[in-house]
Length: 178
Image 1 (tube, rainbow, N blue to C red):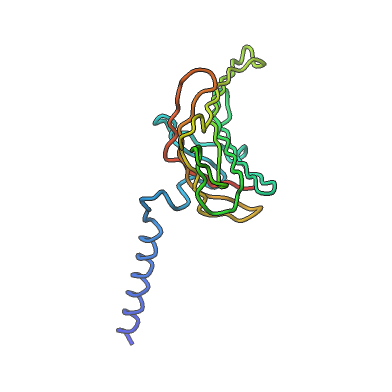
Image 2: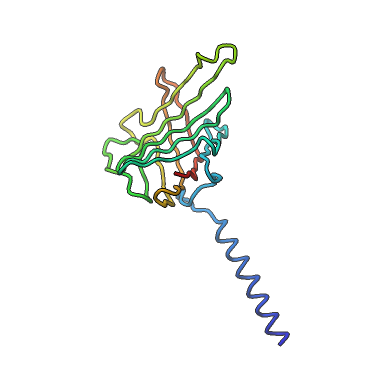
């Protein structure tokens, strides 16, 4: 009897450890749901981490067009906006490229500075993608439950609307509620 209990206990511990190890593994292709906390979008913008607030991060869908957006809030806010056209759920959506398939996307990154002495005149800079015929990034949707949530990863390069300034957005992930 003692041997059976020991074997069952060891089997249980091995199963728990194996499950934990598998759930923590990552894929080289950027798959998986990313590391964003529930209700947020997170990424590195030119190497600096940016994470949106849950209260101002959401997704909406009308037919086959899905939009996600999130904002950090505050007087120096940063925001991400994604539009996925021809949205079909889980899959990879290219940002840019001269031979775009129906599964396509665009993205923007926005920085807004508010001077509290003149709050009605914020300074806003916007970077858009795509800005060329070349593919400049992608959005990978790894989980999607219609009307509930969407999870995935992204990366892209975006060009400022005025000038030639390019932002490199890497290590992006989202876990956004509808």
